[in-house]
Image: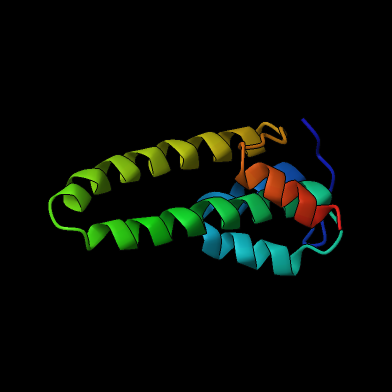
Length: 111
């Protein structure tokens, strides 16, 4: 586990975890605040990409009668599992990359 400091003076693994706490909101916050640490910026961008898409999908599906109402709890469960997994992995200092959102995040951070 890495204990590198960040622009905010917090260990990078703690900042990485915090990127996920409020979903894409904390992702945006840490993306703006953390200018140099690529580990934190990756987790911030992955949080934005993952949870903003889940939020939009949940909103759209919620308006579909019956099928949407049945799928919404399933989407919520998947989001909860991802949220816990991503916070745990970031806290352990791992750059855990989701298939699509992780690739997107990595591309954005490496620019």
